[in-house]
Length: 561
DNA sequence: GCCGTTTTCGGCCCGACTGTTTTCAGTCG
Image 1 (cartoon, chains in turn blue, cyan):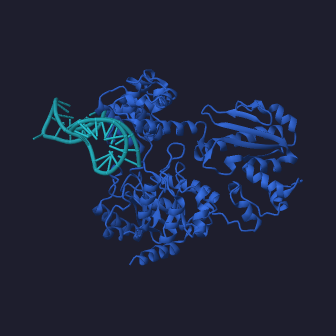
Image 2 (cartoon, rainbow, N blue to C red):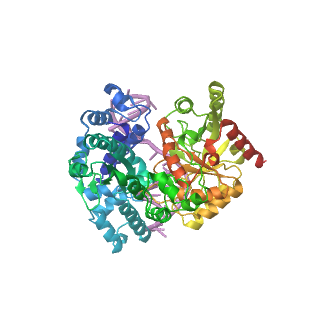
Image 3 (cartoon, rainbow, N blue to C red):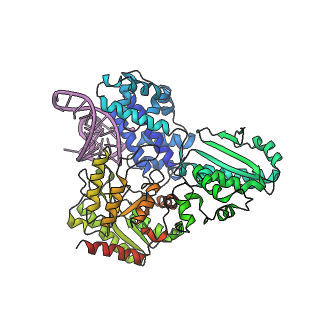
């Protein structure tokens, strides 16, 4: 069992205990163990069991729970408490904005036991009767439920990726036995690398069409049902898969049709005529267009660009020369600064690492006060001697406070090579307030990069609303780079605004926001959406070589003197 | 339930903000 699963189990246990009004200190202790387990730099399953209760925050009681989980995959205490809680109440824990205390009142006082009932009660104005609830809270809960319902059956790209690739392998192995020379490919949102996937589309071009269709439902990893024009399956988790089987000769045209969004497909086919087409490139060429990469087929402005041969050369993962905006054990990261740097240098072959631990306001994340900033800089200087020519840049993720100011005085800010400014608190703002707050941060001469501009968590929380154009224009005017936060849950700045930013001359940066060594791999997801946005390597800050980025930071610093 | 003792019991514990209060509780990152 992974640490993450153990951590989640402990969190669920602590939340349920809170719903059942158990000893608050006991609850706190379990919740604390959840945080600790989540941040361990080693796998618990590799640890000798007698050493588990030596871990800080884990005593005899929690060690025995963890051992039970590792050995049986279950936790009796959790099963028992789940038995005593209506399933709908457990589900409510996933609604953003209400915690166990409010859920406890919803359940025990209002006798509401499912999300559906809760939504109904909001509409009937019944929540405001309960103590601690008012109109605003009721509205907040209603919005959060709507957001959650809209996310049903939808998944993040990263959640789908492993499943999709396994399925593809299984399907290939199965198919080769029935139709040796069949063609197959992903289509739809997955092939377009959309940040959210509603369903997984796969196209098979069969030489022996009837044989494949006849046998399709015998493909055991999925429970496929034959529909009008395809086979459909839904996984236990509610993920939909559509499998299209077509004649091999029609494969490329169908693959094309099922990949682009409807607007794109229609426009291209209007130009291309009826074929026949040898492959996808042929379709675009007969339409008089340059080839359009799948990620771009969103009916945005890609057809116009292709018409005039103005499509950007899309950035690739291999173009990245360094990684900016990452955390270490100095704040809430799992691995040390040296481990993070060595990973970049030796595993990823990068030239530099930008370390951006949290600033002092983020107390919950061990944010750095002024003395610790100085301490970290000393460590960076020493490591830079040791790891040269690899370079660690002195960065900080400075909180944007409610009034838009940054978290340190200018005297401290000027000691950094670069500053990522991001919002972490007070996320409920209207557009005017949020925009004004960000504008002030962008205008701060020490701000180098605007971090995750909207604070959104895909499928889980909408970001605060901002006036994108004003924000991007201000970044252009103040030479501020905008982050593409590569965490698959964020992917913020949204790719739909990359083009506008690039038109205005704003640089983008694919930042993993890594809190552990494996976190750097998220840059892959950042690259996928950057490609959707039309980013080319020369407009991406962390595709700059060490020399180029050094010069960039220096010139930005010179501007404010 | 954990921790740390002046060792077997008592203390544990971030700050800002919001919405609900009329002095504070719940939630968040």
